[in-house]
Length: 140
Image (cartoon, rainbow, N blue to C red; front, top):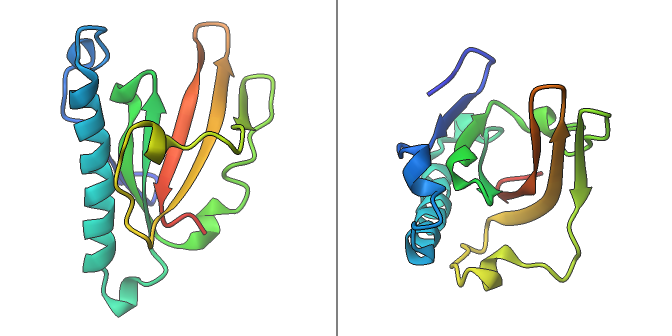
């Protein structure tokens, strides 16, 4: 758990070698994604009126599910410009509108949660990554 940057986030409590292994069954990965969605919904329902501005969401990282997390931001202003990443080191490109993580993985989405997906490309001198990031929760 981390709170040093003014927000709270929690990564998955699994071994990366296990959860990102090609031997990990898709049913397990689906159950993990559904559990993250369910926990976001649960945390949203626990908010008091004083916490109305808090934004609760999960980031589902694919294919590296281990990089997924749940986050709680103190207010919606943290999202200003958050999804706009277009630098040499990091690009987030919107996914095709036909893509639907919920349908593809046969997940259940509570009606009050939103979904936004992007292709993430990260490249610096020591690290290269290309995958998808799906944000599910309170995104506005």
